[in-house]
Image (tube, rainbow, N blue to C red; front, side, top):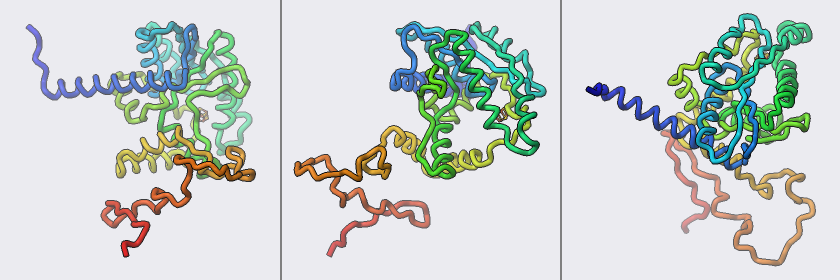
Length: 305
Ligand code: SF4
């Protein structure tokens, strides 16, 4: 006799199934759009013990089984010897999932502690050391791609960090050549919202390793930006999606970077271009003005009289 599911359980199972499909679709789409993984690749998945990298590994392992191409996966964790790091957790988990893995033991924690004065932020040196080690390991393992668990919200936060504090429009790319010129780094979670990863991680009950073991304070500016984006998402549904889509829809002729567009040598063409810039376009208006109740009223460009 089959058990009858409680309606709440049924709804939860349905939601989880939808979430699973969405995650796999978004990751598959990002991989295809940026040609992240090719036939014969060996993908080194960097696993820290956080929700993002567990999710990345999980989805890639599933996609690999149904992909029309052949590629290998090796999970790599860098044990930085932070005090209290539970070194048994990842090997046990990876064995239970039957995923080939490598644990790299390097005491970067002591190096960082020794070189950075007490109270100063350790992250920049720590991540530089970590990056170098992971690139070296990728070479030793024969990996052709290095996969990182950054997601859509990380990419947007980075864009805002760079605009707010670095005066430049620079985000976090879904695919890049590493600074040592030897590795292709990919971010297959590029299209995935962090809230989906949080829900997936809770469902999968990953053995999460806290990321505060080093004792370094969270980057407060990044935390603020994350709060700002979450608040926007709550207040203005669709805004984050639009912002993210905009990162892949840049119009250099309508920005002001002289390295990207030849403003200084611009010449008339004498040729009518229906797609060209009309300079006084209807969509150059001031945009909708928010009213006190939050609804929007479009400003009229021309007077009716
Ligand atoms: S939070 Fe800690 S482990 Fe992470 S980059 Fe900063 S110093 Fe390194």
